[in-house]
Image 1 (cartoon, rainbow over the protein chains, first blue to last red):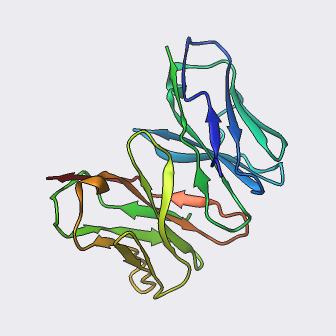
Image 2 (tube, rainbow over the protein chains, first blue to last red):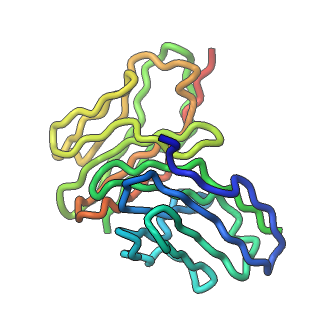
Length: 112
Length: 113
């Protein structure tokens, strides 16, 4: 199994630009999670989906952030417009309902 | 709300030393408890878990026992190796059906030869 796949692995952009992060969960998993990791705030859950439906987006920082899961094998996290304080490592994780979460390698985002 | 508290790091040890990383939790019900490990440049990996009181999770020489009376889930290893250097996260899940994990802040472990 290829595990959770995230792209890109690194993204450098300028303030005000749109950023799109991508995630392919493990085949057969029906829950998907987006996390953000920073030195200041640690690991934060942004949003999670079950069967492609957003269940809890209370962790999404503000309206500049949006996430979609158009099908069971793909999800995106979009930031528009991006700001320097969005710089972080963004992780995607997937699981079968009620079971262990498997994390992707992360996308390191730098907003200049 | 539900929360996890871990000891501050970094924890610096010599190879073959005994390791303890403390973790306590606050929860209104009966959570499942987890330890995840993050190696440099990688995502988190499940290290071990316990789903009910007095359960002991173990993996790769690491152990943790779910102590309901002290609301703790301390991670231990009898003899650490340089390759154990990583960040360790304690987490809980309230078993509401969607496995929403609440993580501690992480503890960095540095093991020197």
